[in-house]
Length: 445
Ligand code: IFM
Image (cartoon, rainbow, N blue to C red; front, side):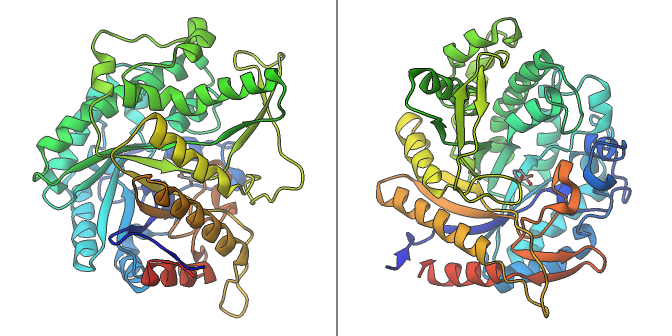
């Protein structure tokens, strides 16, 4: 059966600044929390850093040509805040703005629509030294940065994503300490989550003001489908708690203007300080929701685990990626249906979906059959959701290129294009050719 997508469906690929750019010390770029974190021994596998990464800062024309050769209609990338305002606040570094200006022009000349993410985790280190996201001033810092970027690019960039995965910024960065800035403080993490959302809400009107009337604004959340490990009422309740933490903690304030009461009750003293008017700002109307989906979550009740009282289960017999994530395309279909029914965003984009596998180059080719199967199955889930009325308008594969996978360094390859880190050669994997054919056919054979 052929699966054909609606006319105008946006086919894209996504990346993020620190994961691909390199050129960490060039043209006035300041230090980010990921520079500091990755250069601190013990934080990143093999001591890898983003200093060079894919050298995209220098090779972007070649990368845009590669995108064009695949027929991409859109490209999602992020802006490195420390390139634009190296001290976090104050003086603007024109050379940083110039880089993104050239990239945007290059994309438009190639017929590729830019989708710009303002924050994909590279906070200027100086702002972390002032307390980072747990400091309420962070919302104002972000507003200033948003204004600078959108004044420069708002005439040509129509699609803006304020934040990428604020759940990860707050909880991996400030609670579990496995991401920059490496802090383990649950209370600070909850406050960071709130300030990230506030920063998002305040940025929305700035982006609209600096656009040319065609501006569309969204936020990207990492969302999951949560299943209980069994039908036991305790496990079903555990799944509800997990859903509160993983999904509703961000969806409810953005789309309903309130935090989920059941989750806030669980938080007790850890609940964030929320000021009068914050939630109205956070719930600023959006044009779209960006969804990053990789896997589902299966949980069991576990009274020994503080607060959430849940334990993750890895279902037996399932397929797992190199990240240890279960391949579960049905979860994407169910998630999309649920988002449509419970939150009704005007449009949804899959802003990330993809998988890491242990790719190998053989005679100049990378036969990544498992990635092709992963993509095919997840695209089928997207198509099913569209048939049932979900306003899914586009899909961005994660990722265009193999890149710096945060705490895992360069050990995990998510790209549809292989990167030889020794030579910086780009080798399109079989999945890139598969995706090229999907785009050309506007569907999956
Ligand atoms: O590489 C990351 C990306 O930066 C954010 N979303 C998940 C990806 C895979 O872990």
